[in-house]
Image (cartoon, rainbow, N blue to C red):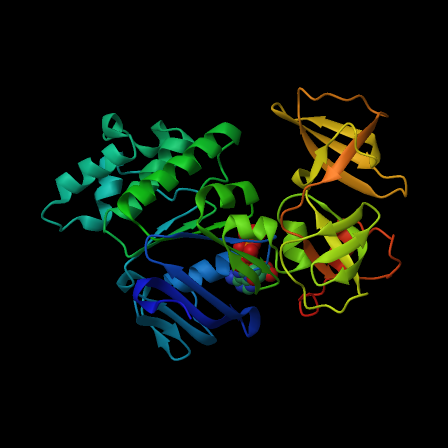
Length: 375
Ligand SMILES: Nc1ncnc2c1ncn2[C@@H]1O[C@H](COP(=O)(O)OP(=O)(O)OP(=O)(O)O)[C@@H](O)[C@H]1O
């Protein structure tokens, strides 16, 4: 059980939808005070619907939403959005075009006696002190989003919701601003829930990430655990890169595969002899010149500091491996490899149970039906 003292946001068995059609069901999420959470998932899985229900723009059909212990939503109970002490930042900034930067930030605290000080402090926080007199159309996209953040923080909300806040910005700016926003929220100890479909953004900004599929939560965990210890094949495939190879469980922590025997650091409850799919991430495969295990390079993508190699094993199975880019190999070369997987991740084999069959990720996803993909 979570320590309820430090929980700011609680979603308990939350269900909501539109016109009698459920979109989200049985959702349980607990966000700790000062933490940044993130909802991540494919388009249409219900991320924005959840955020809108928390903000009070949608009614809930089951379960409850609590903020600092107070029930905001449940069937038959609905605290209006303006009474929720929740701030929102939207993808399209949603600034008032006829108000200056200063007045946009001051909008929600017009009657506050310390309004001037608060606005100045927030403009300083988002590094826009010099631009208070400008109008939104005189700002870049990144600057507009900083104003939107300052405006959302002005009324001192108990929770900040951010809906795809960086998706109108490109590459480097997006990366930089998302890092800055994390620093600002952490500096002020603000609890926040972010929605994105960009995994690297989710990882860069959040303490906990919830992976959703078809309105159901697959896993709520740290970025590290989602990557290294995915709870379902869907999470394994949705988060990061990797391939599954077929294996056979020899003992609770050991699997026989075409790459040899791989031993993990935790025991699985599956029966010895079970056919399993073993997840191998690109960073689980290490180059080792004198290794008897050889793979042929069939693809290569230069990434700067590293190079991603696509490797084919003698059986035809494909793996990906990341090597430092100065460790350069031409296409067609046979390289020695070894497995360096700290966390052995296995799932009950999907589809055919031939021990050497390899499933492409897409097929894993098809086979991994939402209710049938628990380990
Ligand atoms: N106002 C609405 N009326 C009816 N159905 C809606 C409404 N808004 C969203 N939906 C449906 O609810 C489902 C979830 O939509 P939602 O916008 O929450 O998904 P999302 O995960 O945020 O997607 P995206 O990443 O594309 O923004 C979708 O099937 C969508 O078509």
